[in-house]
Image 1 (cartoon, rainbow, N blue to C red):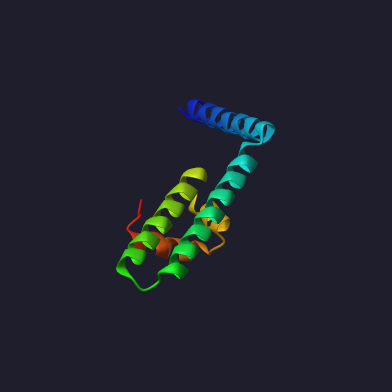
Image 2: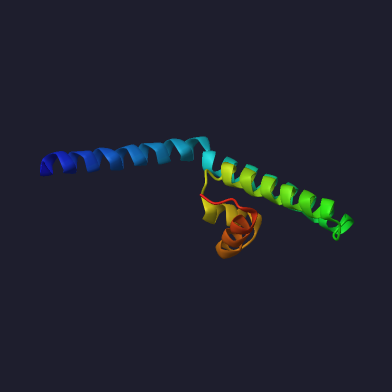
Length: 108
């Protein structure tokens, strides 16, 4: 059983290395990060614009909430659910991201 376990762990390690090498060769990580950053920046600008244009009205609050939710969901999709990466893309701390996700009802 120990031999099976060690062979499986070696296979698992080799597979991970191969996937990382393919990612590196294709530049996938950089493309995902770049795309997520662009989505995050665009969503932040959109949310900020909505906030400043009609900050007090209930309709505006709902629109801001929808824009923030959309930005967070898209950023999380672009970072494959990696919350640390999403926080970096959005320019906020991980804790701030967690708090915002909780306040918007976006939890795993």
